[in-house]
Length: 386
Length: 141
Image (cartoon, rainbow over all chains, first blue to last red):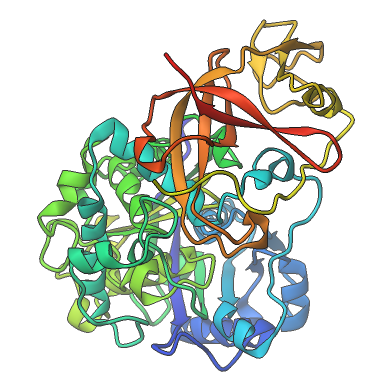
């Protein structure tokens, strides 16, 4: 029996925070609580309405801190795509009646942690084959694996450093219209190519930022969403796929698991790539964004380079992509997927000001986790798309 | 020609009971691969069961040590202590002739002659405990 989540649940509240300084005042649980409260206020709801909690480390510890006693709990951690996975699982839980109001939250402050000498959140734990089969070779994380994907894509399809740079240029154009973006000054392809080479062929401006940032979303049933203040943004389709953990185990470095979950989510939503008004595709690196364009079917495999050359993904282009300025220019605290969802929701509500895409009805949040390992696609739509 | 090779300081690989035969053979500069007795496929990285057919009867066999360059990156900055803090050096994914892929450094190769698809052969770098780390270098086709 074919099952679908289409239209069963809606995102009714969002919040995010970032700053041109790259740093935020709050950190830790206080930052998370502020995002949850802001997203709930946006939804016209309060903590007492929440019966489902999502967090990448411990939804249990978070709920205890917040004083919430949920009946749906979700601590899936897939790296940067975690929040798309949370959205998928929350929609499924709501669709089947396991719970009614779910919050997912993220906050990380790597930039101010470093300045204040606070310990970072990430530590290696447990047995790890990478310690044996990868770490001795000095691959720089996280850019090394993405650099290897770029080298292979260039060798196989003739993709050029200029084409990758164009993605950073278009994304910066979007960032120039986001007052909270870390970097807003326009850049050129030459600027990208002149920035220091990191892990070849990636230059500094091919790489995402390291900033503080936080966000949250609130999801509830389509029925309850009708009674809330904001225009509901419905989950039309959702799917997740992964095919490796270590980059040395990735079957094909030019094809991500997005080629599996992207079409699956589109099929559930009943949309084609040409129906998508806004694409929020995780841009940890320029190559990451290029692979999404191909794997989600916006162009054929190998044609991502020529596809982005003509300002296609920038303001005024046929496929507005990463309209908040992306991980490349807006913010990137480590697991950026939350910001994909927040911006997609705001675009579909028509709240994006100068960077608003006119008449946007279908938006896609496509998260990428670990090292091109875990892809998760959420197709979102306005009421008119139901 | 830019001087290049391996990272200046290695993170030494731990070994487990399952992977010990691989590492012990490296003391004699021999590259071993696990093969599945069920589906007769080579397996890398070593593990307790075959990822293709779930058989648990796995045997060690010598590998040819020959392969080709699937992809690579030249690390120019490497601020991480894991990477030794010194560049540039080459990290590659190497497709062995047997049909498995492994990560390694490419050494004894000028940076400007690196090319995806180039033929490679195994070479060794001794670790402080007497084990050797497999690396790769160019070979004649």
